[in-house]
Length: 147
Image 1 (spheres, rainbow, N blue to C red):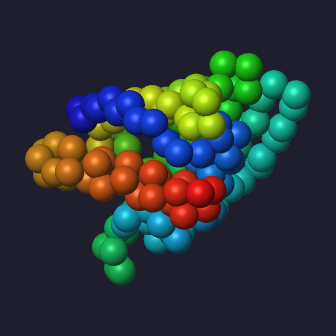
Image 2 (image 1 turned 180 degrees about the vertical axis):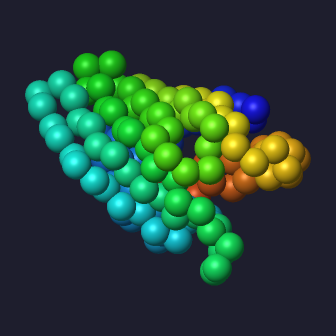
């Protein structure tokens, strides 16, 4: 099992950051190791956005597709991501957004385990480095788009 928690101030408006995080089809443009993102069965109501999403990650022919269920709870400004299919045994991922002046405080939590114990052991060793690289990519993308 690998887990981490990050807290950052991102220099953009809360709604902009939420929109950017939910737009997984754009992830290949800026998220390291993301080859393809696809949104399936998106539904929206006054207080909730839900969809299934597929992310293909890896490099060239060495890649895996992760299928997840994504829920954005507008009232609590929280995105919850859970595993549906793919190489994960389980996934719990939460994004919390809080407006601070013209910036957004982002709290990110992830806890997951891969089905393959060998890959899981490898992932644990490089997990923090990879997570920091991905977090930096989101921050840089927000600055590029909204500053």
